[in-house]
Amino acid sequence: MNSSYRGRIAPTPSGYLHLGHARTFWIAMQRARNAGGKLIYRNEDLDPDRCKAKYVRGAIEDLYWFGCRWDEGPDIGGPLGPYHQSERMSFFHDAWAQLKQAGCIYPCNQSRKDLAEATQAPHADSNSNTAIYPEHLRPPIGVGTTATHPGNSNWRFRVPNNRKIEFNDCNVGPCTFECLRDFGDFLVWRKDGQPAYELAVVVDDGRMGITEVVRGEDLLLSTARQLLIYEALDLQPPEFYHVALLCDSNGQRLAKRHQSLSLRELRATGKTPQALRKSPDWLFSPRD
Image: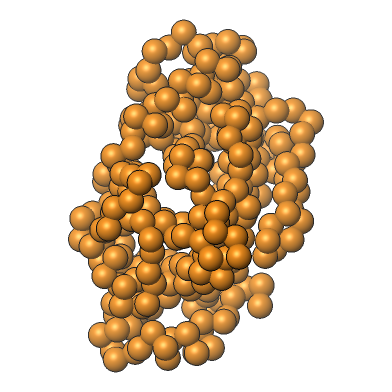
C-alpha cells in the first residue's frame, strides 16, 4: 500500500455533473482507496462567467449521493487549501512570474481573426479544434520579460522545436506528441486576468502534492503541454490515468448539456448509484 498516494477530483462548476463525470471520479476514488492514499476535491471555478454557486453546491451534493467521498476539499478543509481555485490566484501569479523570468512565455495580442488569417492550412492541435499558433507570429526571445504583471494580454508558452513529449499513461499506455506538429504555443494566461487551464492545474496539482491525475481521454494532449510546464517550473509531474469517455446512444461524448444524463435528473427518475454502476451505459465508451 502506498500511503503517499494523493489523487484528486476537480469538477468545473459550469453545469450539473453527468454520468461521465461520476464514472471518472469514481475511478479516481477507487484508485486512491486501493493505494491506501488520499483523495482531494478541488473546485475549479476560475471562469466567473460560467461558474455558478448553485453548480458548486450541486456537484458536492450529487457526488455525495453517488457515493464519492474525499479526504480534503472545500466542504471539509485540509492542510493544503484553499480548495476553491478562484482563491489561489497568488500561486498562479507566482508561476506566471517564474515562467516569464525564464523566458518561457510571451505576451500575445493577436485576435482570433489575426490567427485565422495567419493559419492558411487546416492544421490543428491533435484531438482539438485549435489551429497551431504560427511560428512567424512569435516575438523575439526576451519580449515580455520586463513585465511586472500579465496586464491585458494573452500569454503563450513558447513550445520548443524538434521535441517529442513522451509519457506512459497508466491506462492508455505509451503516448507521444511532437511539439509544433501535434500542438503549438498554447495559452497559459488569458487577457481577462485568469490563468489558463494548462497553467492552473499544473500549479495546483504541484502544490497539493498530487501523485496521480485521473481524468478523461480528451485531455491526453493537455498532458503533453502540461509536462512542459512542469519542467519549466521544476516540478515533479504526477502519473496520469486517462479514462475513456462515456457516450450517448448516438456515440457522442456526454456533455453538461445532456440534462437527461445528469446525476440529479437520474436521481429524480428513481435511479440508484448501484444500478447506474451496473448499467451498460457505465461501461460504454468510444475505445470500448
